Image (cartoon, rainbow, N blue to C red):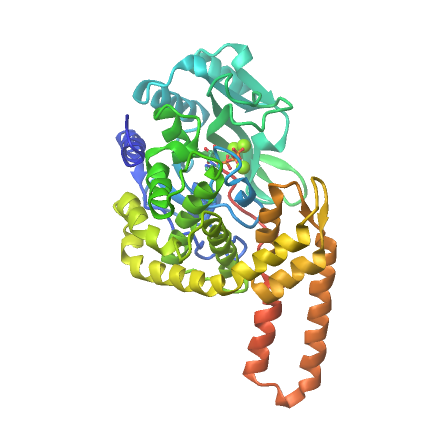
Length: 469
Ligand code: ATP
Ligand code: MG
Ligand code: MG
Ligand code: MG
């Protein structure tokens, strides 16, 4: 059984052997792309290479890219702890062709890697193609010898990728692994496809068109390839589990949480262990790439991730700050592949320690209010938006933390009332601001920002163009 570190190397070695330049992961904060909150796919660092605006000394590349999908169009934060296959931070393995090879080679490379090198059993594999992409359908038949029933045509945008409203675009083909009938979920395209039985491991994007501003779509003179495979997902398959959180790397982290809390990671509090392990990775890598917790923008997404984890640490009975004590384990597991977390270890530790110490001052009291105010509420009930706002404003509970806390009981927050309370406070803040005239000091300004800044975070839906794979 190979560990995650060996699997990452095996992927990169395979593509190096096949003429690809191995390129380092780019940072989680995209360079020169203010429209994107975090790097969320391998292709992000190559966007300008695909459009031809930037030239590189190679036409084939392979990477293991650090990705965060929390905030923005791809937001997997709420999946963590609930599905076996989603993280907020994960590594995307990818191979890329910049006008070099195309569909046939891309399918061949992928198929040979997983069936010959990784020796996955063919009968467990199935693929999807975009419903109009007969070429891909035929190639899968020819190269993989798959029967028609295992090449599923998908008519939705899941299998058609676009860089933005205009620019390169094209059909995708995804490879799925069937973990077996003991796990809930249907095949891709079916009504219950959202389960964890058929897991999407690899997405191949065939960039073959250019969408023009007028609506016309033309053929790209030199089509390109962009692929993405989740390292944790392929590792799960290779390690004989359907569950990303059971792989060696994640197990090392949840094991450390067990040691520090004396609560088993396999019992009823499993989700808390997973949230902590996942959010530890996201927090560490974000801080190492220069993001610090704050009340707006990227920093607020980081703060939300950290505080969610901290509530789960509290649920596991940790009396003292816990997160920072896990950092050495993560550095031991991933520091060789990502030396930036070795360099940032002291900063990460201190940032987590400070944030948790600070949040603990209000966490317990906030939780008891949350308990009291939700007492008696049953499945399907709504929690007061006013109270959620008070928790946010006075106790530092990001809205999604409150939502997360209530979700297990089927209670949702009255977000309209939350927004109204927020808006009212902003209006009050504006009124006192305009009244203060010349006398307004920095202290007043920063005080207001502390209070209302969170509404300005760019957390959701502000992205213009982004990587999809
Ligand atoms: P899913 O449908 O399972 O949410 P996706 O279609 O959103 O995945 P892509 O954007 O195609 O994912 O990304 C390429 C690959 O990255 C996926 O095939 C998967 O292996 C992996 N991946 C995507 N999101 C996550 C995540 N949140 N955690 C772990 N791996 C992921
Ligand atoms: Mg997704
Ligand atoms: Mg998908
Ligand atoms: Mg996909």
